[in-house]
Each structure stands twice: as C-alpha cells, then as structure tokens.
Image (cartoon, rainbow, N blue to C red; front, side, top):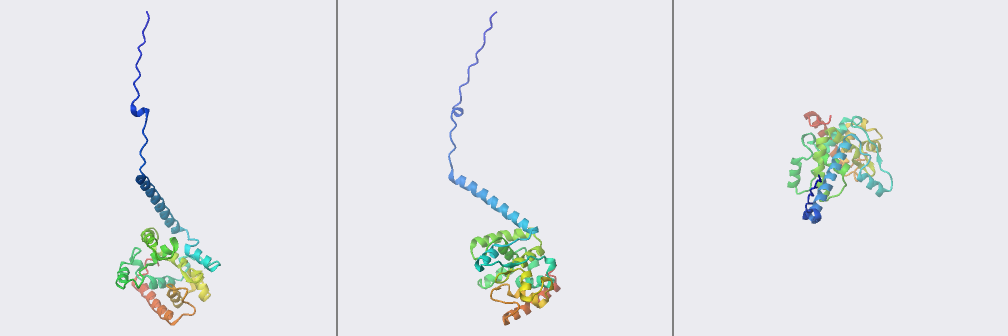
Length: 248
C-alpha cells in the first residue's frame, strides 16, 4: 500500500528577518560613551600611579625634567629615606609650610579661609597639595592643574601615610637652582648628609623653600635668619604639643 508524504508548507520569512534596518548613528550618544570610557581610563591610571608611588620612589618629576632642559645640565637629586633624614628636618618643614599637617586630610580649610579673607595674597597650599603638584602634575597657575590637584590630593591622603607624603615632599622639593631633595640640599649648602643636620641648619633649609632660587641656607639674608629662627621655635613647639605625632 502506497504511503503519501505530507508536505509541510514553509513559513514565509518575516519582514524584519529579510532585511534588518541599520541602527541610526547618534553622534551625541557616541561621543558621551567615549568620554566616559576615556574618563574611566584616566581615573584608573591616576589611581594606579598613586598606588605605585606609595611604595616606589618617583625617579624624577615633570619640573625636574623642565629645569634640566632649561639649565642645559643634569639636576642634582639623590633619594633618601625618611629614616635617614634628621627628625628635626621633618619637623622644621612642617612648622614652616603646614603646621596643621597632622590635623587635616589634604586641605587646611582654616588656612584657605584666611587666604580668602586676605584677598589671595597669602598661600594656603598644604604639603600634601605640593606633593601632588610636584610629583604628579606640572607647575603653573591654571584651573586644569588646580582641579586635578584637588582630585588627587584626598586620594593620596587616603592611600599614603603622612610620613610617606612628607618623605616624598622632602625628596622632590627644590632647594636651589638645579638642586632637588634634602639629600642634595644638605650636601650643597653644608657639606653634610641629611641625617646630620642640626636644628639651625634644618630651619634654614625649610626657610628657603618658598623661594629657593633667591634665598640661600648657607649665606642667609636677615630675612631668612629671622624666618629660620621662627621655624626652629615652631619645630620645637609641634614636637611638644603632639602635632608631629603622625609622621614620627
């Protein structure tokens, strides 16, 4: 007996299966997507760099490179651990630059208010802000740098110890034309290693930091001598009242 096969009719292709329309290009959405991606990459790189310099000593800085080019010679710079720096040097630079260093998270709001009331004629940058500027950024007054400094400073404060921040600061600060770091500075001015500095020498080095190209620690002007005397007293004060506890 013959069998008959049933033929199953093919379903017609749907319209959307035969021809898939192209997605409409949206330039604003495309641009925003890439802006977010680039921002994510930039933030990740900054976090990684801050984490790296928590344990690795910065070999150089943008400012050191620019000064070497300007001078047409290598700058003098030798890294030294905080343990090999005289403790009075650490206290002196805090007394000179940021007396409330142990009491803030990167920004001294009291100093900022005082600077605003003084009409911007006085500085309010903390040691932490100066480390961010000297280590990760560039010198110069512009809003981009200030904005980046404001973002990186609290991140660094959260990831680094206060002693590490101070160690990096003393190793990248400029003490004379082409002379960077306290090791090079103590040898340049006094023929000593940074661990052998006494209270007067440490105070003089701290006194020249705001204007190192026009001040000398070995041939101090009357102004530098007066400022150094005040710094020496301030260093002794913060040692007594506990404001040096976070880095000692």
